[in-house]
Length: 107
Image (cartoon, rainbow, N blue to C red; front, top):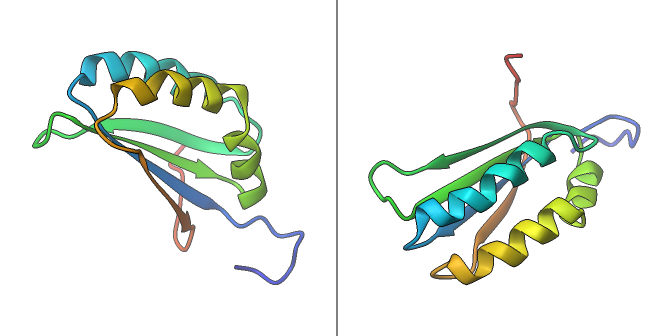
């Protein structure tokens, strides 16, 4: 991480879900992804479903800074998604935060 506090350090969050009801979970995740893309500091958010493991779904989020990511985790979009997703999950979601060593958006 940079020592200069004014410099933005991009971060990536990966949320992993396991469910026996992937179609129902995707219905909850779709609006979350679309609405969260408009959050301040969001560089991109995508969600993917495993081809080899149909009950495995992941959200990949890229944020311009750790502060933007933290604000988002307290947002109404995140709280709503979590509230509605939990009953569909086989286990707690796997959440991990990554330093953006080499992240580039092709937009």
